[in-house]
Amino acid sequence: MTGLFGGTFDPFHLGHRALIRHAMTGLGLDRLLVMPVGRPPHKSRRTTLAAYRFEMVRLGTEDLEGVLVSDDEIRRPGLDYTYHTVLRLKEELALDQLVLLAGSDVLPQLGSWHRPEDLLTEVTLAVAVRGGEDRDEVAEHAARAEARYQSEIRLFDMPAIDLSASRIRETLESDGDISGMCPDRVIDFIRQYRPYQADGGFDAMKESDWQTLLDLEERAWPYLTQARRLHAASVAQYAARLAPLYGQDIGRAARAGLLHDLAKELPRDRQEELAARYFEQGGFGDPLALQSEDLIHGPASSVLATELTGSKDPGLERAVAWHSTAHPVMETLGEILFLADKIAYDRPFGRLEEIRHLAESGRLAAAMKRCLEEVFEALARQGKEPAEYSLQAYENYAGEE
Image 1 (cartoon, rainbow, N blue to C red):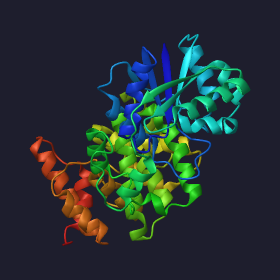
Image 2: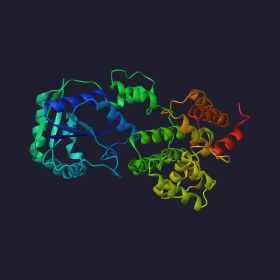
Image 3: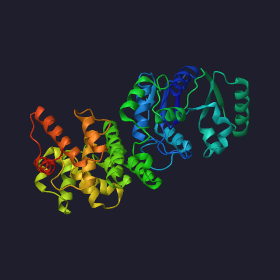
Image 4: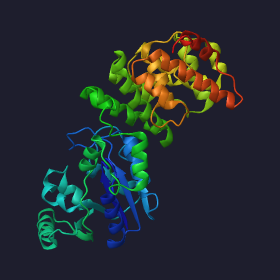
């Protein structure tokens, strides 16, 4: 028997994990699909980027036998309704029966769901009764729902856990300690990537820009592995943080960060094709750059990013094209993206805190100089030479301290 447990998981916490464990045993499930929602229809607040939420679920459940994390809703553009997801899963997995997991708080709210009558004919709803709840009262609510929707509702027990994602976010935003609230690996992830940092840049974005960013994340999702999605999200977040310090549009900087590696995992011949188009269309730079494997994904990603957004933005295209090596003629957006790619929170490079301090204190040119020096040292350790454009760019910052 297969179960489905969906939610924003923003973040994934020990209450989620306990519900999963007790559902597996209490309901006799063979497997459980845990599915972070892409675009929830009922959330009024902004959810964290899907790449972050998917990773927290993956880290929080990876040792649980029979549990699979699904990106089914994330990779499909637009709002996500459980009814449509259920129909799709039952067809794709050839399921006669599907058990939908929920907390007992959903029982009074079933009427607000999308097509609840149709949904509850397709699934068996399984409701968690938490320790401390009045089981008879929950059973009474379930019986009324069964009668109204002519469906089966099962109850399963789990211990009382006084946790909520909103409480955890509030604790994080005030720099509080969340030890004992989330699985250890989720806590480690949050500490490194800082998705709930109050001054992380995203919080200052206009709502329209935020929705555009979420749309782009969904469209970009199939092009990237999860590791690359996480890096893209981190670069977008850090670019958004730097943008207002230098008079740049936050949404535009975030879009550049999210899309900067869009073509990096495509086959080499496809990258060459896209990069050639960049130069054929008058792209900023020298076609000789195609000779460098380290450079080719930049111009290729630039072309693909324009296709994905459906609009032409020459400044963003140039920033994406040369984010990897820098360029002797760089605009502020390009400098921000170059730095964010190297010093975002997912990066472990040396001298990183020094470069971040320079960038965040308004010393963009000095941060560029230090960052390029760090890149040169890292290449030397690998026995590699810097790209010619990197050396030429460095000359512009050589006198900065």
